[in-house]
Length: 185
Image (cartoon, rainbow, N blue to C red):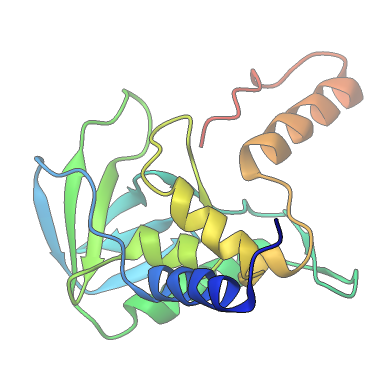
């Protein structure tokens, strides 16, 4: 049985409403850091002098490129960083830190005007849900993909796969691995 036009319109309207709604902040429970922020990467902020990596997402790394819908290559690391900066520009950012593995950047759930910054980045298509850590942003990513938002308008390699590929290329070039490919952000 084929869906009727009203049913299709209802599904599209529901998807658009879900995409427009800010996802609720996830996590919680750690130190609270508040202040103006500077984006250093598409998933990392300097807030009140401290570096915080946004919990549950991964954005392109330095040197990573993507392809737009016409197939032209562009610096998606720079674009994702620019998009994150636009979200936090001249606003107070509030981050609640989460437990982070030793020797890794501090993780945090950050909000601007009550909206989850990581969720905004995933919904806009400039960061990917890092489901190896949490499923919290998976549904938001599916909506961004269906709307071809941000990087999803063209081709993007997940950053964790790009890092593994770069580590393998480096190992091939030198004959021995410089670091173990982990895929982990």
